[in-house]
Length: 227
Length: 402
Image (cartoon, rainbow over all chains, first blue to last red):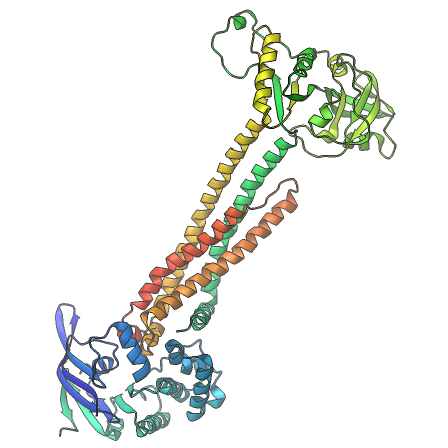
């Protein structure tokens, strides 16, 4: 079943008085449970694509159907609900809230969704043990290593049991060894049926994905699925 | 987002920047404390003055020699240039008025009192038996001036508490002969210590029969005639009748002034009430300034936490959740500030009362309520703009700022 259907997506930015086509006439179809790597040089539109897929940005034209539902016409708050329940984000620089503990950072999406504290505690406890963070629950982000931080971030991204995980250079700030751990973790999640989309510069990381998209000048240059 | 979560999140966010939070709380608390202390001062002044006037006596009508108002041309004025004296007989004539309960003539002068080698300046009030009840004085020992013909003063004196202490010390004063001016008078009573009495400290007063005082100071005129009306309602009638009677006695010439305690009291009450209000208004400006400071702090918080706001949006926070979180933070800053300011203000008012015990520096309830609610309202009002700005941030831009 198609999780994501993009058709004729256009996204333009105004830089001074010149218009930049970040995405131009993009058509894309991603099935549920796929593992997709998005690659390409800087400025090719990778991040813009990821922001669009994560409903953080809106296209100027075209439609985006997530799980069969047109999400481009939703109001900002409806989009927030979709982000909350269906999409998990993993960022290059982790984006943990510095004043909150690891456990609180993991619980943050549930707190924003208004889930009862008892249920939150139960799920956080399970996530902490799943991601090997049991004895780091009360540590602030600055007391954690880079790998631990990214594991907290992944735990946070999965705590709402989303259908889709969007990872933007998830290993970009990590050394090779911890990066490997984090990728294994993400791939394990994909193995459980979660659709995984990773934006990366790293060809070896890209090669591990089931499907590679290469972007250039806002267009799909190649797609391993259609090759 | 649940309400308790919103509040906890806002609290943690505020505590995350302790210095900035403390400063804005301080600004708000200074504003509220200013309102509380300044209105306590203003209202204290009002109460003090009103209390002073009330302590003169109740339902008082006071007759002064001389005319204070400017009348039209009066043939009588052309003949006599100086006002007639107020005499003891004038005072006596007022006793017959139906609206009047008591009358006390008052002659005043300075003299010295001596006993057993000790000498002291004293203010001498010449009056009659009814002076003490009219002025709400209380005798600690002995008895009042004798009821007698006002024109024949017995050689007796009632002395104030401080004079008794200084002249007699541990000795009993009653029945002793003291020298006042060039006369020897027997002490028949001692006043209870009272403290103030509007320019006349009763503790340093000696009271003698009115005719004796006039003889002592070699004068026929009275300083005042104190008239106590039957009731509060009778005051205007008593005033008119007293004026009328004295005018007749002075051959149609209106050469006395009659004032009522009520009128003075009401004027001062209004005047000082307005003063308190004005002072409160000035203090309210500091509250507005504090509100603007809270807004500033919140705007800085929004800018500093842009990345966090972007993250919250990515994690599925609605605009409303973010708005409420920032609004809750602003409300907390002002609420805590208002509370601290209230306590500071009460402490300041308490300090004032300790330093000046006679001055009743209590902040009026309306000022406290208005101060606290203005603080909360400005905090919320000035919190709205930063909260809206936070909620309307573009998540993509906000995330890039992390």
